[in-house]
Length: 233
Figure 1 (cartoon, rainbow, N blue to C red):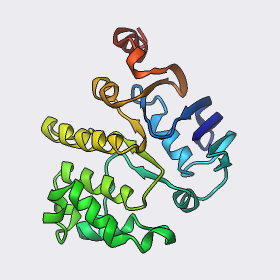
Figure 2: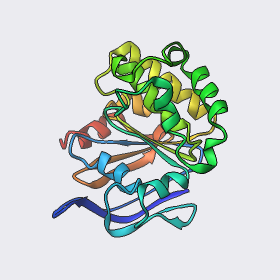
Figure 3: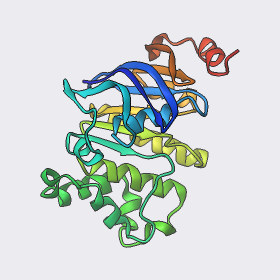
Figure 4: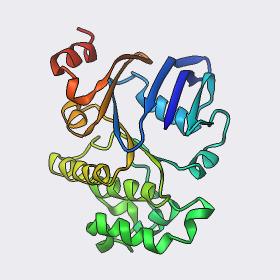
């Protein structure tokens, strides 16, 4: 469905991804794990067109995304839930969610999709008129996920959803991701918590220094070996 083929990308003269290739299969959760600085977030930004490719290609259903603007990629059905939430703090919860329906083809379905998000996140329905800057970290993460869902994406890129959250809120967020998986959503999950990632994923890729060190179906992953590679032991 989503093919990353021999991609190199980075920031100016600093290259981060080195000849990276992987396949995201439709209807599966693909976990991208690895230590800080491995290139996980850079990979998501490259898929989303936020940084240019210096080599290789990224294709969705065989249609190349290389060189496309981010808003064009969003129209093609890819949504990014960014690390750190990045909600619009001075806008209400509902206005934040509505911003997710940017593609013209999704604007007619705003009311329906808002109802769907509020069904997934009843807490957001209670806070729909509240400014997003007044939310807790977990609630802001819910807004970020809901905003991404408003575009009815075919691929959902989720970057570090557990970062900075209390354990009880992490479990709630991952419960929502499990529900989205049960609906058949295609999810690319970047996550440092290996246990959580493995519990949700169908396929696991381990990154280290911009390269893949391991790529296996989740049920076949040896956790001890994974951790040895993760910590470069």
